[in-house]
Length: 170
Image 1: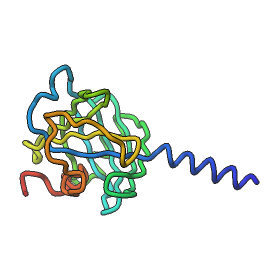
Image 2: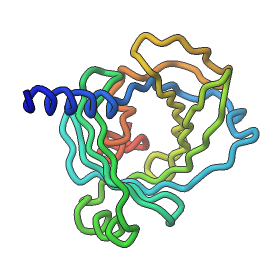
Image 3: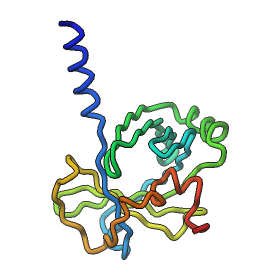
Image 4: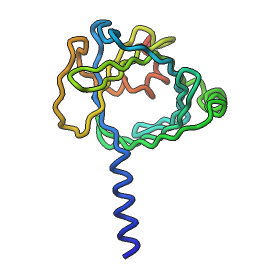
């Protein structure tokens, strides 16, 4: 009986850690209206076709470590934990083997939904991608005029892939 409750509890825990997102290329800078960016430095310690482990520093003030495992093209398990910025800086320097991306992230809203828009810097300069997180894979949403072609199914646009194969090399 105890095992059943533990398994049911773990099942609930995993369901709450599921990330579902879709990605789009950006057509204009209209997403910037009313949205201030944060600077993100993100490195990959482990990367495989079906998941990754990364560390991220936001505006030099906060840091997280994340572990992701793909379920489908638009869904993945995601576990994210706050860590000290000093630890994250060491991880970026010592554990990421240069697989680091830098970007400015904006948080525009459209039709009641929050979007993340990443303007990539460095070797990925010129690439701008919008993401929306959804509650289910088939959830309906309105797409803003500044969001263009969907690239969710194109693995080249995964941040982990961009860290190893930058946009300037395509």
